[in-house]
Image (tube, rainbow, N blue to C red; front, side, top):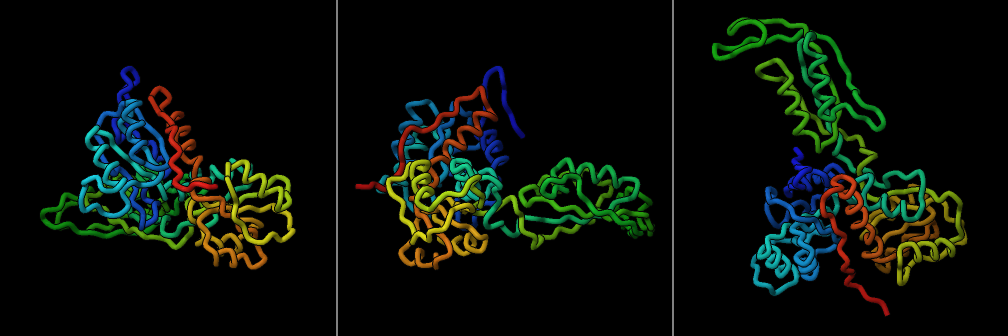
Length: 374
């Protein structure tokens, strides 16, 4: 649900979360991650939203000064369990101060990494890449529902499932497969069958409906099914498919409209991403046309970038031996962790301002990059 009083500009934390989950459902965050509402209560009224890459003590001070009682942070301030809150670490000081001043903290991290219009799409847009697609599609995100319904009610049930987001395949909607058959059942004396009577064996002409749906919609899909289905006990089956979801996953790959030399591309990325320095593998004297990107630590995607035929891979946190994996096939570029993700807060701020234009959404002015160059 979404509660927003236009006259009074009243909004609660859950309303903001709902908007953010439309962009990047938390169901697609990596298992190791800690996303969602980390501090505060979802029913708290919001006075303003402050967008940041990291939640540091000075960011909490900024939220207090700007009357923002919800911080939307890319990185989670709480990553591992806290055994105490005594202020001995910056994490404890942030949590302590946020609680003291009734400030909620929400983190989106790898949910936004895996979103089609998330972190990596922003990098692609900054680098003017076209024809972008997911570099490493996430598995286990496509689900399938099979249910059985009387022929006379099949259209009603299908429509309810479609309205809940089921049956969407890429650029297509309202996708389903339907087959006819005979269903049998006999309810006991406690049953209240929609067709027939208790203790009576019935044979009914039924339609089997098969639809696929995105994992994060499962609760909505099941609610729609149970609400629309006429039977007291709804026969249904749920499956997790092996199919890759090409709209969800880590990294992206795209193309430059016009090829660049490696030297020109390095200069272009350095200027565009405001890098102090770029660490890179050996230049191969090949033109750069196809470019893979992955914000944050991306060494795990080197093989995927090479397999996709990328001429260059823009990421961060590469180690010494990672550069050897270029193997004269690709230009590996480490532009810095902060530098690769710095525009994420701009993405979030711009998105929320479009969704709730009459509400206070502020971009943090604090540079939270802990790495300095000399």
